[in-house]
Length: 229
Image 1 (cartoon, rainbow, N blue to C red):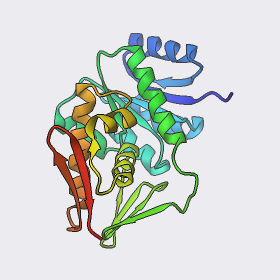
Image 2 (cartoon, rainbow, N blue to C red):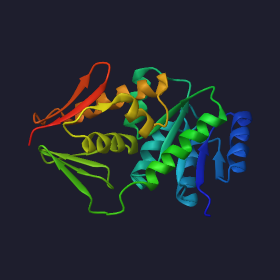
Image 3 (cartoon, rainbow, N blue to C red):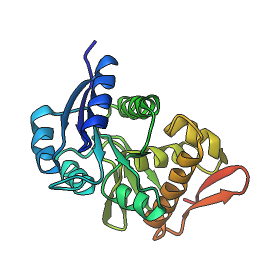
């Protein structure tokens, strides 16, 4: 069985060594650097399956690294490791191309779950490169992670694309908030619930120009993705 490769960028030597060695015991191949300026060149060299990026780094911060990596490969899963968990910080990270956040200090078990979940989501993407979902005045290009509205193209993060696809699968049918959390994050913790709130806000912003589409919050239940064709 082929091992998954991880690019890990972390400037705390003790934490970095523990995480790297722990992931290697789980059959991952881990390439680590403590310098943000080297991250993108290492990405090109290693061609990893997933990136774990600390936000605060010498040379170049994690947000900048993520943006540059996204230009090279749009579908690479990226996990940010940070002590910053305010909503504005989450939005900044998602705008930069992050798929998930993990807060310091964290358990190795939690990191492993998040890594495996993102890799599973990546593997489960449709294999048809022409996969396009049309709804309202929009087109969603699944593998390219692109939302086309009014001749404009919005690049989605991996998790934004997965959430939109999940909502589309339940168009005009209520879907439980817990079900979304379990499918996309693998658990319904408070932190992941906050992440979901941020993603829903972002999708509403992207879709606001199409009056035939609405994400309706059903209090105490979940969401209704309303599409009037």
